[in-house]
Length: 508
Image (cartoon, rainbow, N blue to C red; front, side, top):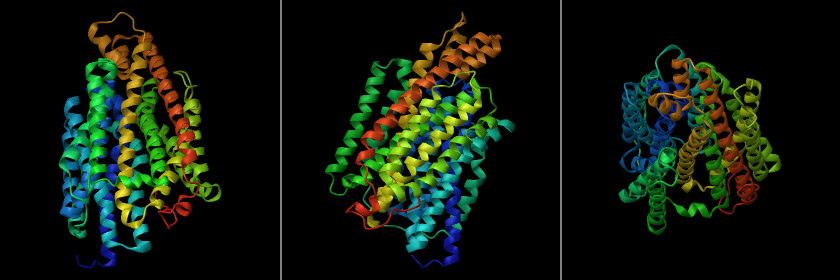
């Protein structure tokens, strides 16, 4: 590859930010639209789970193979293809008139995002080195991170002024700018030493994760012990196990399983995955609680999620100082305990609770997420030798996104099961009863159409009880992780792990 001028390098880096910003936005922008989709597309809770999870499943399953494809075929051309796929999927989602089409579009968006995320990061070492490389990775990481809190706010504002499909159309101008900028500014680069793609292993990973999530999401509909649930869940686990076994036995694996011998990598990944599960589960349920049960507008819901985002930022920034003084083990354990405390505070909420309590537990939750997730990620990256940094980072991101998909599936299904069990319905026509049982948004629409405040009150109480059940499970998961992974996590991974002679990165 020909040398790249300093100015052009930074302009090329800026072009990468467009794609990553869109990915960051799309992870959270749809959450405030879920109640609207439940009514406009007649979507059940299971449908809403698939609308969220179709994106995350495709993203999680394809992150590693997409990165390898970029290394071998050329990162620029693969990145342009990924952005084009993402743009086409956004256009398809914007014109979707059924749940099935929207789910398919979301899955296609996940495919595009799976290309954009790892390939954008992999380009950096070909253009930057030393301190400049650290700064470049930090900027790209920040670009995607900025999209996360902007998602609910932008999504809420768009829903206030336009139809729900505007949350997808907003991506199109950003993607066009990114495509043009990358085509003009980004140099081509490859890595012929990258591992080869293994089609059967990739198929096992994709089908396994999809089948496992399918089994969990459909369990409240078909029954937790039904054939479809057991076949999907157990079959998915068997395929995932086959993928892992293929990587362990391979002489040139796509996934370096030896990374898990590193204590910081193993337990840091466990902690980051558990926190992501809880966070994605909360972001699936809380917007529905704020918008339907508490009656806030879409934009008002986005604003009321700010305490969680603010807490996450404060917790993440404060974690660096706490870890430097008291160690990473203490910091991540404290963050997990804070997350559990936020979950337990959420149990005090009911349909008549004021926003003050909600804001408090959202802030505590966010602080716990930031205080555990940021140092866990930081320690993982700091423990990786330079030659394994790219594959290690991609593997950790894969685990986190997998945790997010499973979190939405498991916690959404628990919520659906409890909601249906606690819902008390007056005599209703069969179609109205089915809509009310499918989701709290459906119940609210039926109550409004029939002029039945009793039905609305019953649905709101049932949903709040379901959310409480989920947060109780989340609290147990956080405590379990704190007392199992926490003590095994190195106190100062950058210093006391033999595998690394470097200080932990600050770009988590």
